[in-house]
Length: 284
Ligand code: NAP
Image (cartoon, rainbow, N blue to C red; front, top):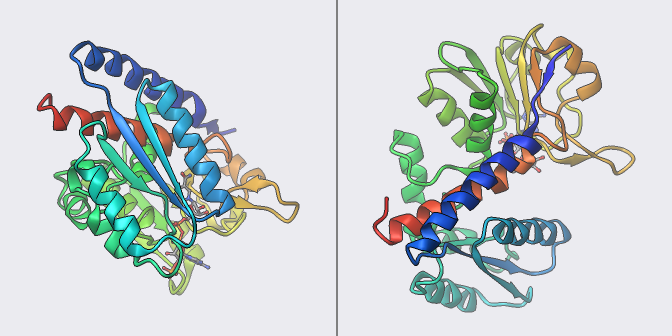
């Protein structure tokens, strides 16, 4: 049977380490602060924002939530970001995406000061992820790398297959694996023979957004399977992109959903906010 990668415990330890470092920073008069902006009333976004606020409290951070109505104009949102960019109490700013259609998401991403861009979505930070000179770690993919490291899984020389090429997960995940000397293939909806690609994987990362899409016949015996997906099955129950019950017996390691990658994303965000506070006070 596989080793089940415990993201909950790993994330808890990471958050405890952030809390410890925050206490040391506070002794020097610096309090990390995160501003979270939410536009509209998307229920999933509201849950994500609530979880981020709670994580801030657990880590001893100052936090501000800006819940704006869906009718907020682009100008109003950009003005808020500009104010937060200049606010010394705020180390990190994130605007929960997606924003309503009348707001240009790209303009929002560009408006956030790259030094406060703890989600690492600004092109300046994206470029640094590409070159390997990383300032802020991309939260979900970096969380995956922390899990691999925690369980002694070294991507070096391994065949890594990432299914999904989004800017927030698939692409940066492929880059992080490449920086660690994995031989990386990125698959997507136009990949001609997906099972043939995934069956090559020593490390398979699924970031697709389709419940139980990766089936046992798509996985090599002994593979490490990382499931980034957060989906709902036919009964509305939370599940991943991997058909866990049938895939797990073939794996050496596998992440469950929930309790795998999910908790790592917020823990990495906390790590980034702490780093932002240190950078802004010349302590890093
Ligand atoms: P996304 O932007 O919708 O991207 C999905 C990717 O999957 C796309 O690149 C798409 O290919 C590919 N894809 C879709 N159908 C496919 C198919 N039949 N065969 C092969 N590839 C296919 O999603 P995302 O934002 O990356 O998120 C992916 C999943 O991760 C979602 O379930 C999301 O909820 C979850 N997620 C979890 C966390 C976390 O903290 N755990 C964080 C972020 C996201 P094309 O590019 O060709 O369309």
